[in-house]
Image 1 (cartoon, rainbow, N blue to C red):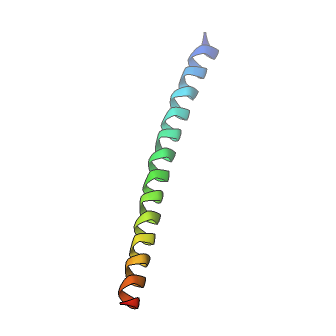
Image 2: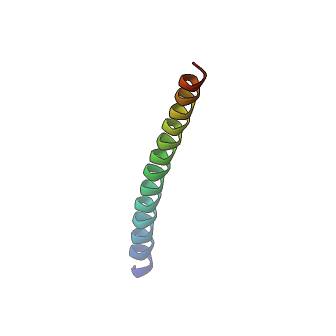
Length: 48
């Protein structure tokens, strides 16, 4: 019984951690995409 509740608790924690990691990863990807866009824009303005 205790083992069952413990595994359930661990599953909930893992789910939360993975959810947070996914959010952080998506934010990081967005930041990188923006950075590349800005650099490209800057290059375009520089060449212009």
